Length: 356
Image (cartoon, rainbow, N blue to C red; front, top):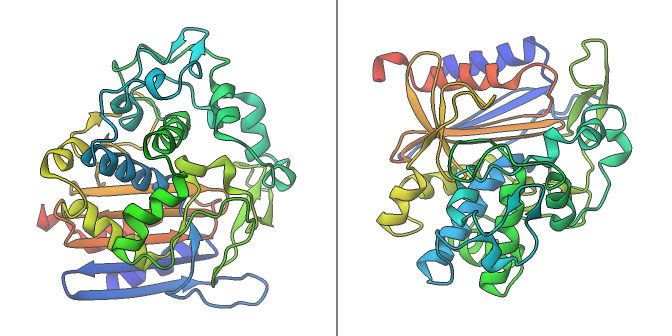
């Protein structure tokens, strides 16, 4: 594990506040850390820490949707209009043409309110974030921001990453189950897998358990920007697209089960990992998107499977072998040095090119 520890140290030397990595390989496990959890006190990062996982939430949302399909409460070819009548319409957007499958696979064509609306973008990449991080949103409000714009393309014709897809899935899950999204997460995933450190915060702005501080430079992309502590936030902006808090151990357990086929039928397992190309979509290079998950060819040519998530001050990556027996979970608590470089270095240390 010396190479992984070296990669962690290099990430901190490059400027990140702190980084953790947990490796699972059958019965073998290892946890490493570098840097600090708190810039003010110098406190070290620890294994029990909880952190915001951002868009890794999408893998949980997709899993709940698939579990409801297995329970015959939902079908992948149901339309958005069937479950949410009248919500997706106008400016060329048509919920009658968008299916659950399109939402899961990010092929609906719906505009990403988080990145492609100038006002929303400014709220979350400028110093305005310091006040807007406490804004309370409903999923419907966020979806409607994206509906002000024509779709990127006709449903089912190409990949384009959009948080609107997973906000709609959260609403469909609630309609199909008759329970809240949070309750279905607990019923179908958290309790069965024993994920005791994982939860959906709701309107709480603080993390419930032990946690590192989260740091962001604002405005984003400005090398001279100040570092701000952005640990407290209202996660309603993320909800079913990016709202969950978890730990390295819980994420390892969940993705091991997800990749290993423990969570639903073989037919649905095949559906989740039937990927589409992300080429030309301005997304993570060398990836193919599944349903809330993706596969990626690392710079050394090895292909790994899992997911990633980011929000101001917290970036998380989980990647492993196709059977889920070997996994690496990483989190950094700063966002001004490209964390993907740190993640790739850790992953290449665990999955060297000779093992292709």
